Length: 214
Image 1 (cartoon, rainbow, N blue to C red):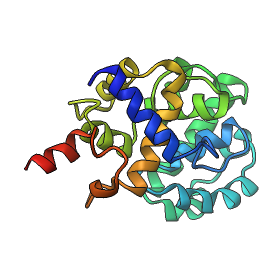
Image 2 (tube, rainbow, N blue to C red):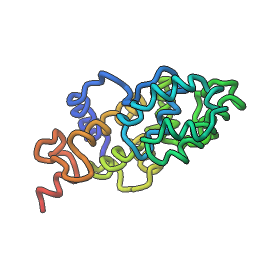
Image 3 (cartoon, rainbow, N blue to C red):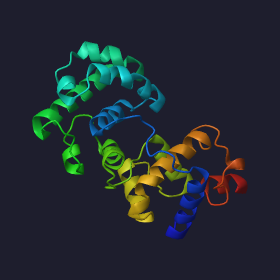
């Protein structure tokens, strides 16, 4: 896809979903942003937001979560799924923040990637949402699906999709395109039964156009 078409798609989505928020997770600081993003894997942001008050009431700081009892943490985050692994990840992440970074979540990609449970997607979200830094583009399941359907990328690999997206969009749009594709993926273009007939991108989207031709 050429950058001009990509910009037109961005503009239409931006008109369709005005930015009233920059995150789907409810957090107060970079530490909460990182922990909640780790917990959001394989579950909904709504579910994570429900456990957040209890989790941070009990463990409000990296120091307190770093020394937490795993079974207690598992009980609090149980509804997010994969709670055994997630409990290990968030307590390990808290320990790393305390031991290596003085209790403060780092604001660089390289440092974030040394933290347990933090991959490029999580690091990009933390940098953008908590620090206002656009280092890359977070590729979650919605972004991956829509990037392939619309025609932004021909790859199924998240790292390659991120590279393709960063080439198509200026850096000032990197944080926005993640938000817009997630909104559109949830509301119009789910994995099953995409609503192509009412989609604002139906004349630009590779998937919608192929359906019409078929």
